[in-house]
Image (cartoon, rainbow over all chains, first blue to last red):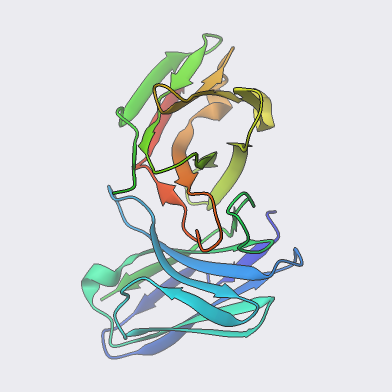
Length: 115
Length: 115
C-alpha cells in the first residue's frame, strides 16, 4: 500500500469511447502527476499539478485531459484514443515541487487497452 | 540533454550471490538520484534515494546504492540476492532547483534471481 490509489486497475475502451482514470492520494501531498509507461520505453511524464494548478503539460495530445479538483484527487479524462495509447498509466504524488528532493510515490497503475 | 542509462536490460544472479544493477546518468548539476522497483502488474515502489552526504545509501529490503560523482553512476547493490528480488528495477534522476518537476527514468533492468 503506497498511499496512492488508482481506479480502475484495468480498462478496455473503444476508440470512440469516453472514459476516465481516477487517482486518490492519502499522503497529504501537494503535488500530483500522471506518467505513461509503455513497453521498452522510459516512463513519460504527462502532467504535473501543484496545489490543484497544472504546472506542466509535456506535449500530451488533447485527447488526454487532466483534472485536479483538489490536492488529493487527480483524474485523466480519455476520449477518441488511438491503439498506440494502450499502456500503463501511473499516478503519483509528492510532498511538493520545491527543490526536487522529495520522493515521488506511485500508485499501482491503470492498464489501458484501446481497441 | 538529460538522460539516464541502464546498460543491461537483463541481469541474472544466483540466489545468495551479490547483485549489482547499473545506472549512469547525464544530468546537469548535481541531481537527486532514485531507485524504484516494479513487481509484475504493480506500480513503482520507492527503494532509496541520494540527496547529499555519504556516497553509500541504504534503502528498503536490504538494498543499497553507491553514488560515484566522477563516473556519474548510481549502481544498485545487494549483498545476498533473494528469489523474491526478481523484478524490474528503474533508476531515476531529478535535477536540483525549483521547477525541476520531472524524474528522468532509465528504461529499466529486469533482475532474475535463480534459485
